[in-house]
Length: 206
Image (cartoon, rainbow, N blue to C red):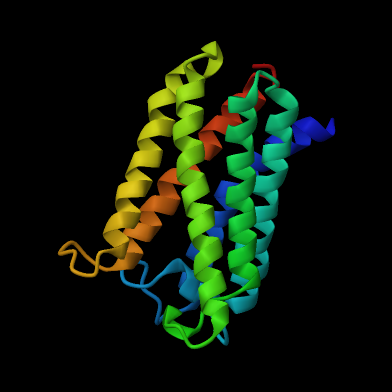
């Protein structure tokens, strides 16, 4: 298998592994609620799931995102917009790796500067993921094998954006921040998986 094709397969594995590790780590923490707690709290300093989340969930899946982006760069050589869209996925992965490298403080309440760095990388990752989904959704309209995925990608980006806004709104009446963060990361993972799966199906030829 060529390195390019291997990179494309990383796009299938990474979102599935990310969501699976969140579910596993959550099951290992009886005190953790997917509705009220941030995902980052599964990897907070001193937690029983810190190593699993920081190393495998944040670090490894972020690395797989970068590998997927490299595979896309080698596949889509159609101009700067495709390059930018691929680099946004890479930046999403880098943001995730950075969030793992700098874990949040217990409860994701700032105690040290590490919390600030964690928040910065997490923001970069989510923002890049949202922009990547929307930009790829627009570009899909130019590519016959992917045209049917256009609104899935754009819609996922918009749902993730609204979800993160609700997560950040202290007074939202619909639930805790965990619900909206899980929704955001869920839809961003699904569209990326579908994109990667379709790309592999077409043998990497746009």
